Length: 431
Image (cartoon, rainbow, N blue to C red):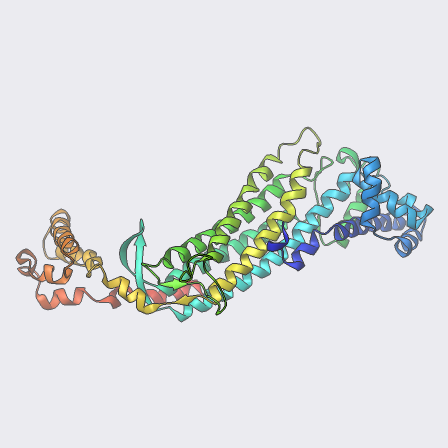
């Protein structure tokens, strides 16, 4: 992932130095277990740890010649650690190190992403509670439907990201496995107790059956979850973009005093952060399909997944970390224009009260079909003439012959649409 969209903490997880450091910790943990099991001489780990140095540049130099990253790594460690290093990797295969390391990096990245979601949830909740009763129009198909509140709109996203948090927690558990089982996963040259020791030390679970590689359905779940979270980010971003349109302007991204919106048009204030989030979501989702395709490896292993994961591991987690933090800041600093919300509520002259009139007509003897026809006729007339729907209703003798004007007036009450809001908030924000 390019620097523009990289945050330091998660980027460091995927740094070459950190990756090689994890490789060394896996090798030393395995050697430590072998010492305890008296498979290798005591004191090897202490000597190697004191002398070993991680030198990414040197490892790459060796890899250029040997064309094998783990061999290059072990050769580099041996150059510094000396003859004791010959006990490293005893009975192991490259995938034991590579897969365990990759899973650990995904776990570490996932934990950062969980913290990001927690921060986002705080920002959303604050806006939801603040605007619990801020009236705005609800839209279906992009068309005015019935009144809701802006707080309720925010609450839908709050619940969605609570679900995303649970999905990600489950996926982290799924990916947190360790395999130290040797060639084709049979433990022929290594004691299974070594795997148990390494897993415990790295706070991972053992992989029950590894075919020399950790099964990629685990990774597919993890990357699919990242794709779902990215899609939720995009849904939120699109909502902000729609609501910031000039003719709507119910919300607006924060715009700094020195910020510029356009190189050509000084008046512009564009929703660039939300548009950027839409783009990042596309990128993260695009990595889901390769992760799914990685499940189908040949026999006990091949390396068709390797190049894919070297890219999608850092790219997806770093991009999502950036996107979650950007969205959190957008929500936190969002300008909410309640007056414009009220203005937009009124531009249809109250035709969104049509369902209340419809239901009332059915209670006084009209069939649903008759009621619908009467109400639709008046609503379309009010819309076409840009006139009051209420005036049309109280002028219709078919209606006033059955329902008093006083009763009809009570049907045009905004509080009717907010009377259950507290119930929704109570069940959504309960601890």
